[in-house]
Length: 68
Image (tube, rainbow, N blue to C red; front, side, top):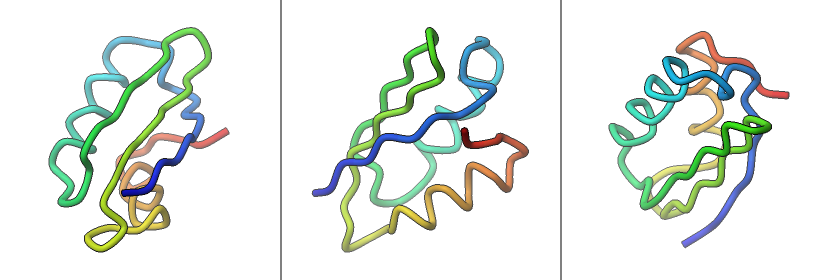
């Protein structure tokens, strides 16, 4: 397992957070994700044998969300 922390600009509002959670839950290899509404911090635990950090970031960006 690997952990990563990213910051998503839109992850301070409920609707984008729901979108983000849906994106992450649907990805193979994502074990756990937590979003902090205060600052858009997203902590993710994933199986690096199934998905890479780059793939996670690309999927988030494909859905119109922006990393800080």
